[in-house]
Length: 68
Image (cartoon, rainbow, N blue to C red):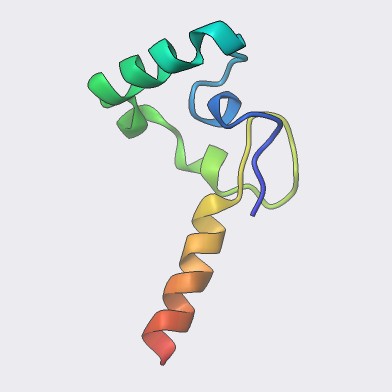
């Protein structure tokens, strides 16, 4: 599994300074901003900026669990 440099770059699409990470995470959760994250950002096929392959990895795990 991979994320670009920082997880907030995937979910927010921007760099968050260290001193603001907690408040940004609180705002993200309180405003349910996860609903606005594009699936394409979470289903990357190769490493690139503001991307992750977490959905692909979760699909693989699900396939292994269902297959047992």
